[in-house]
Length: 608
Image (cartoon, rainbow, N blue to C red; front, side, top):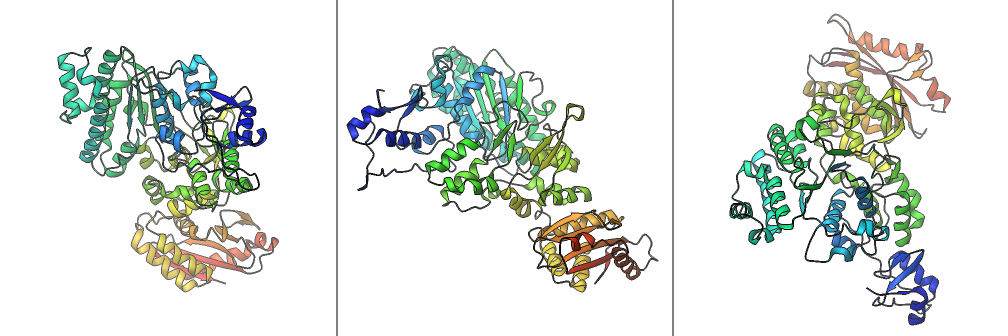
């Protein structure tokens, strides 16, 4: 392709060089590239139309909402250039690389970019990269373009409720990948048996063992046909594993995947490189058994940190292109706050939906995937986990041990792994990292306003108690002790086990969880110091025009203890310990004191 300078374009079009340069920067001139600090314009570029005042009428490219096809994204949509991922990988040359990132952070688009760049095809795919950053890196990197046969599979839509349906869908995806490599059927380099094996896969007639070995089979065939080692790309590898955990076929999918990956990624004689993406890293011993060549790149690692999600500079450039630079602060409040390695990252899905939706801030991310596992954990969370979730909702930090190797069965068995899962899945951010003598200890917090909404809508509302929580919230706000007592008893009668209800801390955690619906109006604080002691729960109003609340709980250890007397004792303790001083100090005048006594599934509520 031939190019002209901005000065030459000015002479042809009669538009000032400065405006031409601005159009190149904003993408208004198709195919313009920057080289050595100057813009070059294709000779066949169309002259932009100009209005009566001489201003350029720029037709903005549409935003790539849900577009994961790289060729389509760079040809027809506004594309945030992530091609330097290719450069960094070529510099590292890890044999197998696993990228773990939250959903909707550009994993599939990046994997398709790698496929288009590396894959040997009849079509000249270099045209999709010549105006991208990778092409400015020189022949050392561009020589890799179109060099390798590629196997590409995406499991992002394998969301079935049984092992048989899951296997059927995976086998069909593998069949389609064999069909995509139809050149193998008549290859002169393959044996008769290999061609017959290819046809069996292409017709969908292979058995489960064959499909488990399919990566190895296809790698061998492609290696023989092209006399070149193969690149294997598996996108969202853990989606069917998550389904297996949620729907009761975890052991089946793990057994299949162990053989599937081992057959394709372990054999260095056919493999050039392997790329995998997912949300969680499934423990090495459970699925990547024997793979000593795999490099894990999690959100805590500095390598590749800027390639999944948008950086600050990329967001500013995008907003400028769509004439929305004034919205940057709002975008920061709603969609910024993630820290991948040492890079500040914005949620890309939410940013492009925000701009596309006329810059109206909403929680776009919450409806993009399943939170079943989070609901499962919340449903059986311990009181201190519930308390920490409330701290997070109130903008506080929680210090916790983080293990990026968290696996699905562990999530179910160990509720404390929730923080690791929430961080990896995009519901928390790292706020501070402790010194090396406190390995894996981090401060975590909620990254932005959008995720606060997600917690309220998708996390804390996942339990069966949501409607009860609303009723209890209404009773608290109306200062209606009778309704509060009745609703609490009804909730306990229908949801808790008599054997669980054995301590004050149990009831404390239960009420704390039910207060979630009030977090928009109140700062919900648990076990805080005030006066001469520590209150159980405080609802500090965000606006002083609404009342504040202080709760104190008592638990009857024997059947002979009177609940009425215990509730009165709880109220006296609030007064005696002066738990209301912190509210009074900030100007809250209407303070409601609530004492609640519990025994089994019974409660007595008193207030004043």
